[in-house]
Length: 375
Image (cartoon, rainbow, N blue to C red; front, top):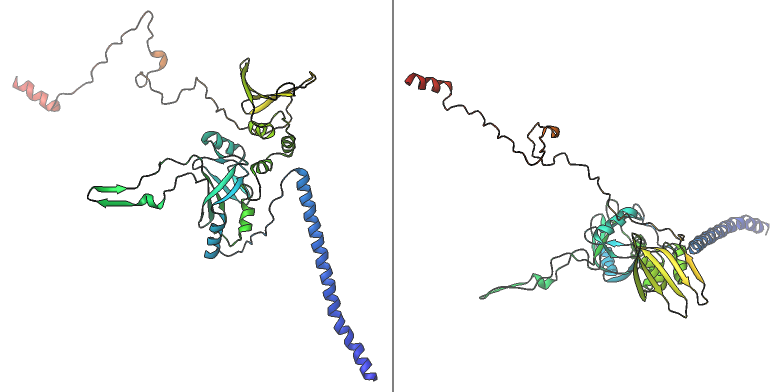
């Protein structure tokens, strides 16, 4: 009996020690997960407070991920093609699309504004976009938006029928470029890695929004927080552009074009008496003055800029007029300076003809000597 008690006392610590260790490990994991979730909630709360939409949560792609498999290629093409999304940035027309690598969009900022001013926008922020074609290449994935920059021919447009009356070919589309299409290329390192559709949507979030429910929500996610609050309150701020004014107040019922000195402006009028009337003055694409006439006769005028937006440089730099190219055409002879050219006093003067060049007789000196001897 004494031996049994002693053995039990020796075995019990060996049995309960691993159980206690595992329980402590579970508690530590739960504490870490709770702290991580609280940190994520705090981050989401900060983004919501700042007015920025939270980015979609997706596990990051491992750096040592293998090359994308054939099955994943087919799944991505089937999942993304013919999908309707909303644009988060402007897409330029033509062959100048967008390139996305490691979350950075190129061109961007002033360079993007110059491209848009040169080629025109294909899609504006908040507009619905249709992913019409997806192609996975060696180191990037190509997404064509709204048909892409070039028209694609159908299979029946390649058919040609030959007969006794000659060749008959199916009618062709206009070979010109598609003015409504654009594209975006998502670049990777050496190759396209294995990924899920959720991870690819997170990579495309800087340019395309897959979660927006309508155009208004997609557009509000692209503007600054102050402008977003003003649009939701149907309030116009000095410094907004035309797109923001339309989202805040709608299309103007009346427009008046006037001139203040040498400055041309456009007045958008919202409302009619006996209600409040707003006069929004725009110079170019910017609101410079907002005048509100209250029902009681009160007049409120705001001209100080309330929001600052990045404006593109639309005016090209003019070259000075007195600068002449080095190879400009001239009527002067080689080696003749401009001050040596005679200037007419009363009328045009004719220059004497230039002397003819010296032409030696054929045959050289020996031929001349032979002619003289013959005489």
